[in-house]
Amino acid sequence: MLLRALYALSTLLQLPALSTAQYVAANGTNSSFPADSDGKYMIEAEGIRALFIPYGASVSNMFIKDRGGVERDVVLGFDNASYYSVDGQHPHLGGVPGRYANRIKNSTFEIDGEVYSVIPNENGGLDTLHGGPDGWDYRNWTVTSHTSDSITFSLRDPDGKEGFPGEVVSFVTYTVTPFTWHLKMTALSITQKTPIMLSSHTYWNLDGFQNPDTPLATNHTLHLPYSGLRIGVDGILIPDGTLLPNEQYSVNDFWSSPKQIGANLTSPEILGNCGTNCSGYDNCYIVTRGQDGPYDWRESPVARLSSEWSGIGVEVFTEQEAFQVYSCVGQNGTLTLKETQGLDDRPRVVEKYGCVVMEVQDWIDGINNPEWQRDSRQIFGPEDEPYVLEATYKFSVK
Image 1 (cartoon, rainbow, N blue to C red):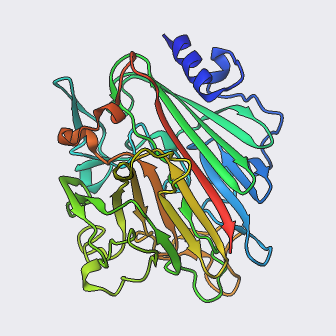
Image 2 (cartoon, rainbow, N blue to C red; image 1 turned 60 degrees about the vertical axis):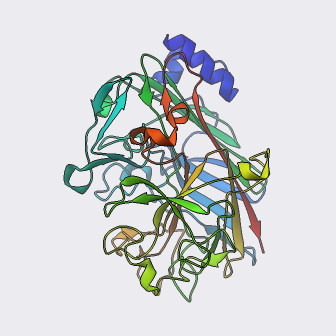
């Protein structure tokens, strides 16, 4: 069964034919380009240079040149790979949350009449976030392939881990082409039906925290052209089964025209938008493109983020049908920046609203809202095709 899974995934990902041991061993790599002294693996192409670490299969650095030709590191991370596992905050920096991203209400779900309980890790035990206290972005993945412009990580998640049923094998491949970052996440349930929903939990600041006028990302402009709806949530951000309209000119209207993330932070309407007494964004926006007829997801970006100061913009393309936006309302100045970021004349930390997380994924907690009919995209068994997530990030400079 495991060999079948490995063959299916390697074929889907077009990976080199490696042995089972190479794919699922706890250590060892297939790489002609070893990690640097900070434990990071670099890939690069024209206009883009990125570094990754096995912990969480995380992106730790993303270098893009701004309008002046200055290279900016536009994602959050730590300087050394060893610090990710000891940082007490663990803000999921650039990792792959799994086996089920985002929140699971009451830390339970039902499959074919059987109720499963997973380990809670948020809100005093009321829910499970990003797969639990030892979710996939807490684990060291195996580097199975590494070239000058691509790297693949693998993970074997055993039956019962964090309470999830069944064994799952997953691969994540990051590739760069000129001015573009591609990601492909694939997972196969080997033994029984189980929920699978992944994402990339990358924190963005397109100024590299080096804008002398502000350390925040509130000046970034966001456009979500297909997101006229969002998932309704309660005060602790658990979906309540409703879909809410993002009415034109409301604080959640990023669809009718682009606007700065900080444009509505003083509006009374923004209070509670990201949970009880929270002003900002931590919202799952639905991506609806089918009303315009057949489409190629590679040609229609679901989001565009840009900074007027650096001139850097990024368009996000994906076949996923939801898009979580988090405006870093939980940051409080205790998370440090990397040496490649920030300015010497102000604290080198991440302040509230200092970054933006953009998570491509499916409808959050769909496993507890069967009326949404997301099972074919969130529940996978041994007889099903693998779970697949693809996304492309195209950078430009104004």
